[in-house]
Length: 318
Image 1 (cartoon, rainbow, N blue to C red):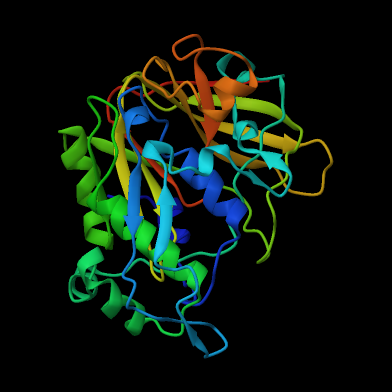
Image 2 (image 1 turned 90 degrees about the horizontal axis):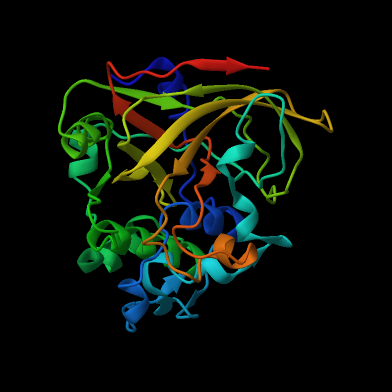
């Protein structure tokens, strides 16, 4: 059963709301890490050329909606910058994840809280790249930018680019979000965790901050977890995937500038990065090779981590 903390986050998103590119890029770079195999090819997403996109102002134009290039498993966003912050700043080394340390990550902002539909409603809506024109018409008016993100979400759910041993699928309803991690982990004895982070005003850009780590709780002794990332879509859609081996944590952070309240953020640490792309921004920034280090990152407010019950970790406080 999903805990009340998770349920509190499932509120309303306007179908016309568009996250900033910085929000999108940071979510995507923490969803996928590339591999030596996926470096050998790129995924070219070709959107329907004869389908026009209606802008938020009501005018109609093709714009650049039909041509969206996505490079291998990192979707090309891994090499971009957003709001002056290199995407490498989203990640950090495992050894700084301890009480008393100071950490300087870029935490993806959350500027909207989408609604999570019941299964009956979600199943009645089209959700496939084949039905993309119908989906655009259903949520019109949509900007070119929002149309690209809708297509990216649909394609990601249909064609996940996974590392060996990973499993993934998308949840489009409350019921599927509860059942999917059970299927991915292969056990009904699971527990869900979410962070307790502030919601940022619309238009907030990601900023790298300095945070005091005051407590670290390891969520499970298991090396396998299922992480569900919220995707950009007119209603709540989660991309859920297993990762192994990982360590998962709930971390209490206090910003040094004091402008935001203390918060609890979910952190995932990848214990084996040997199959990551050597062009991953964090590896490049620190001049290290895949497999040389344990690499961690925080998750966005709406992300959920599921771990097996009965293998809980403990809390360390400063």
